[in-house]
Image (cartoon, rainbow over all chains, first blue to last red):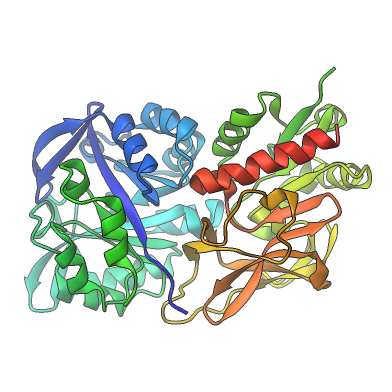
Length: 246
Length: 211
């Protein structure tokens, strides 16, 4: 029996506004985070990710009020990311009502945070967020600080590490494709799917349903989208139809 | 004094959403963990995510395991969610073997993953009801999907306690258990959109019938 894939709305937040850029840069305001989340919930989205777009620079996540308001009337899983760098940060994100946290920069600086988080809160709570840039055919480097800083890790070794550390899920963003609406990097999806024994969420780059058809034969578990929803390019129900495993 | 639905707060998991979901249907829902909270409760919700052993340790620390068992002997409705369902059982094979509340005979076992069904199992899946007349499932259709996130499942020794199944890989596991007034959901009704809220509303109805 095949299982259906989840569709996740990614909402990047800066100063209480939803913003959207290209390649994680050149940010534009596109709306109110709570209103947009509520709209996507009403239209049948499976999950929502709120990302604090500037937290990595300031060492803090400022989304607790947005999360708290969202959990009063949105009854689906909520993930929060951006600036999560300690057990205290995870605790406070969960207290405001988040179900999961996405950890990126802090894990690169201190991979043990993933392990400690998984041991205290359970693997289902700890999502490893990975941003990559292509360096060669089938070779990608892991970046941090919102896609600005190259790390010492290549994708294959980093995938092994985050899984060993007990992450419950991976959310993978191609910085090259992010915000371009040119589709997900199929080689990257294939490369990562064959190295992930935990659920893999692909994020960024989807511009039309043909981009989803293009990667449908790859064994990924969920898709996170932003632009196509923020700009009303695609309907949630249409994306879900194309996400069904063929 | 009107009695409340008690959502047990023992430091495990996201209880904010459970509270918010119950408040839609019954404003007298209350978060608590003291003996007095149990005394004035008409029903109990046992939440929980994470590891079985850790959950049981937290329950025992506050003597809450005894409170729950006493509550069950009064035949008042109990709803365990996710880890809260699993802890209703005799034992779990997570980290060797740990004892549970033993309100329902059975054991908690690990799911067997396959290529398209990974661990943890994180999915919106249909549930297949064994009995269509069950009050907890009133208004639920076979096509409705519910949010599951777990690596272990609870298997009651007696199959008559299985109220609904969920498919995973090429097998099915018990996703709703019912023994008398003790209910358990492996999935998260408070995270399953409108169809999940129907289950919460149905449990509020069951609780009111026992007030």
